Length: 592
Image (cartoon, rainbow, N blue to C red; front, side, top):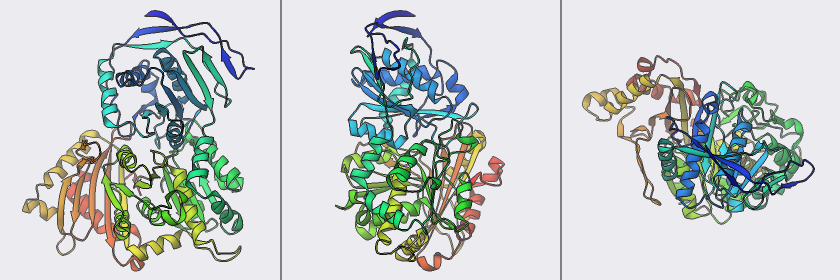
C-alpha cells in the first residue's frame, strides 16, 4: 500500500508516564475486499475466535465503523474508550484497534488497564466524560478461549448500544469496503493506570482505571452506600453473602466496590480474577452455568448470592435456597426504587421490559400509575425511552439484564446494589442478632401484594438452522387461527386463545419499526407462549421458548413449584410447535 507520514513517533521510555516524541508514524493504506457475515446484531458482532483471528476480519469491521463515524462527521478529533471483558484475544484486538484508530484520525483513545473494562463502566465513562463513544470487546455470556467466542460492539455518545441506523451503516460499509488504514505503532503496555502515549498533537492513548468512574457514579449519585455498608457490617455474622464473578470482568469491580467500599470479607467473592477462558466455564449467570453458586446457596449457610456474566451487564439473584426469577427481580426493584434508592427519590417516570419478559412489572406500573413500555429484545430499545425521559427510568429483560438510566446498558452490579438497598431498608430497625427480612421474604411479600407470575424460559442451543426455520414456519402457519389451528392451540376450558401475532414495535421516539420479533400466543387467562430465534450464539440457531401463567392468589401460588405450575402449558407449546419433530431435541439445553 502507499505509506504517508502522520503525526509524531513514539519513544519507548518505561520510566515516563507520558511518552512523546517528534518522529512521525507511518500510515499504510491496505487494499481489502468485503467479508460476508459482518452484520451487527442487537449485541454487536459475535463469531468464533478463529474467524476474528483471520486478518482482515476485524480490520474491515473497525474501518467500516470509522467510515460510518466519518460520514456522521464524528471521526476526526474524536475520543473513544476501548475495553473488553478480558476474554481470549482481547489483547490482540485492543492493539490492532490502536493502530487503526491512529491511522483514521481518531484524536484520543482511553484504554482500560490490561484492556479490561466492564460494559456498564464503558457506558458510564462515555456519559461521564461526554466523549464520542466506545468500542467494547465482548461476546457477553458466551464462552471464551481459542476455540470459543469473541465479539465486538460500538456504543454511541449516549453510552448505549449503537442504534439500528448506525449498525446498518456499518454493515453497508463492510459490504463495499476497498481498503483500510493502519498505522505503524509498537505494542503498548497497558499495565498501569495513568500511563499516556502521545504522538504530538495527532494522536494519544491514555490507560485509565476502568473501575473508579463507575464506582463514583454508583456511590455518589445512585445509591446510599452508607446504608448498605451499615446493614452488611451490622449483620455480618448472620447475613453471609456470595458474589460470583465467574472469572469475568466484574472481579476487580467486586473487589473495589463490595470488599473495599462496602466491607464484605474477601471470602465473599468467588472466581474474582478475570481469565481468558473464564476458567473453562460458561460465564452466563443462570441456574445451569452458575451451579457452583446455586449449590452454595442451597446449603442454607448463605443468605444472599449473585452471579455476573462475562462483561458484567447480567446478574442472577439468589436467596437462601431461593431463586429470584429475573422478571420478578425487575418488578421488585421497580416497586421499591423510590423508597430505597436515592437516585429515584423524585419518583419513576417510566418502566420498561422486553416483550418476552414476564408481566410482573406491568402490575407494578398499573398499581403505581407509572408509564409502561414493552419493547423487542435488545437493550438498545430501552435507550430511546431513557433518553426521552432523561431520568428515573428502570428497564429489564428476562435474560438476567436489569438496569436504569444512570447509564445506557444493563448493569449487573447495579441490580445487586438495588437488592442490597431493599434488604437494608427492610432491616434498618433490626439489631445485630435479630431475625432478618431475607430475599425470599421480599419476593413472597411481592406475590402477596400483586399475585405471582410463573415464568420460565426453555433454551435449545445450537439447533440446526434448517430445523429451527422449519419449526418457526410451522408456528407462523398456526397464526392464521383456522378452526384446525385453534384445535391445536387450545385446551378446552383451560387455555382459550385470545391473540396471536409476530411481535412488532414502533418506537414512539424515533419512529423506527422493528418487525418479526417473536411469535406470541396470548390466552384469555393471561397465560403466554412466545417463540423466538435468538441471534446471540455464534454457531447454529438458538430457539427460545417463553412460558408465563398468572396466579392471582400470590400466597397460594407461592407454595407451587414454577415448573409444576407450567407443565400443562409446556406440553401444549411443545405439542403445537412440534419442536422435537423439527429439531430432534427432546430436552432444552437450559431451563430458566
